[in-house]
Length: 402
Image 1 (cartoon, rainbow, N blue to C red):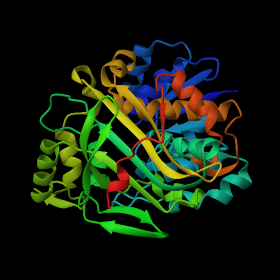
Image 2 (cartoon, helix red, strand yellow):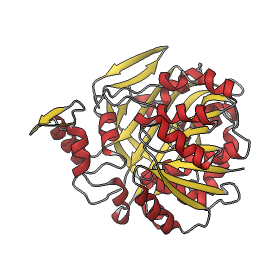
Image 3 (tube, one colour):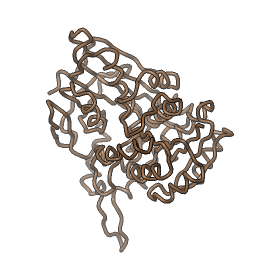
Image 4 (cartoon, rainbow, N blue to C red):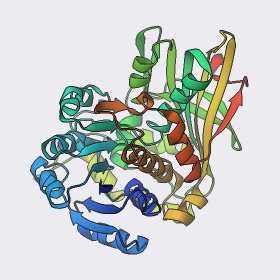
């Protein structure tokens, strides 16, 4: 049995649906569900696969998700809804005996706080139920963790320094737009930065630390230190790591718009009164910004995401290692109608689901992706549109940044 329910019909959900439909030998039945069933109907018609059906669900409501699962009885749910909804979906999985996979960790609506503690608290319940929950199976988090596990398995006796680097060198022609859900994106990058060093978490001001890094086929781009959730699980699962950081590129025009948004209060996530109606400014802003799903048609350029790792090789000698993927916005759009940021998240989500359904990542409990065998997963994403590359003993550049 390999019936899956995909909750979420945004850009990432669209890519997941396309990629699952391309692999009917594994995904024999696919159910697309979201709050707006008409969006699912339109996507299913566009894909045109005979094994796709649609349904409606309120992913904030455990009982509504339970009813969805009882109607369709899936083996696995692929959660590409909002991070606020992770725990509701996990609760429904436990009630119905459904396995679970997501691409981003839970965060509460009322505070932009990113950590795995809420989901890790479900470990024992999933293990006792004989159910597998796979956390963070997008690109970053996701492939970044699998890249790290692959490096540990094949190259390092001790990984000491880890830098995850994420560059979007694409141009969508808009004055300001976010590449995934604007509410989540802006919450993430306006928070304090954080990185791990010598057993402690160091806190920085938002986007305080930045430096130019050179990306393959792209060149130098100013890269900013952020906190990203996979750092938390990677330093726990690979305790030889002395320092772990995450870097993302932003253009100056984007940063100027972001400063204005913050300065005028539109990044607020608390309620304000507008003509007697309670609204959250960031949610209102999301409604007027370009929809990330609509950016793909005029998007040019590519993304480059990878891990730069330094440590000791299997013989105890110094080693530097860079493993990365570059993804074309144009190629992603031709295949799925979505841009590369959605594509690089959706393909790994499908691959992780495939790993579970084929028995290669079936481990009861709640697990981050780096806890599984990286080899079959990386083989699948390479074959499904995300080829990856390695550089041994190259200049990582990050060593020069304090």
